[in-house]
Image (tube, rainbow, N blue to C red; front, side):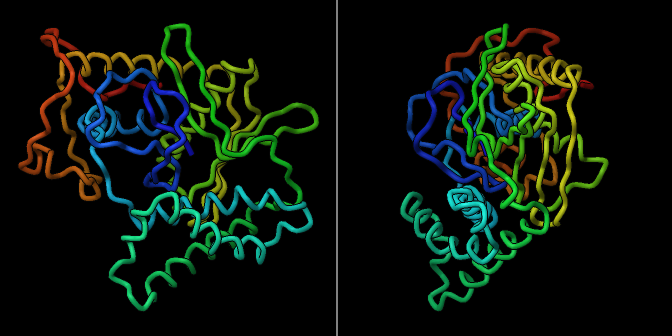
Length: 314
């Protein structure tokens, strides 16, 4: 999970992201300010489509919750709360029993998620949806044994400032620390594991977190672990210093591209197959839409400027 407030204090108001992570709630009509920090999801937005980054960070356009994202948030909450119980009581039945209460809490904190099932008066679709959440929670027990885990941190907010002045921030699902002091960063994913050729992209978020931990604690995490509940896979990677230095260079180049786009107002769409799931088609030129008036002052673009969001090799 992570926060995506670019430059604000740690948020207390939360919203749901596409992978079930927690993100800062978007307030329509808020005064626009230039981005001042970077999170993994917003870095991913810019690399995917600079215009999407603008809509989310500069314009702060609202987005509708989805069943998949909301289910992910629910499952994350259950896995976090299960560790409140003594080790011997961290069982699959107990975890599944947490689901109704966490769903009630989610509806209280995010009333708009109730609209997902507004057209389901008999509750049949909701029942199937909750059963899917139960299956994801149950699968976790085939991948990890929570009775043998004592996380050092859960839902840990981290923030570090690089020598360049760029602030990096996010929320880590779980941090395990071995008696020897070795650190493992764990992130839960409610979707399926990517194919091997796309594994590097999946690890970007984890290397981002490893970089922040290294900058904060001067310790390189021993292991990065992605737990895919949708497919029952666990992806691990043991980073080295060179990995983190490459990620830092990549983020600095990315931030320079974001800075240039912010100053010039030149945010270009990049059509991909992911456009079909975008909430902002009505504002996107690729779909005949018109973006809102740009709310920040602009200057003329420099000739020969770098293409937005196109990053070179790590």
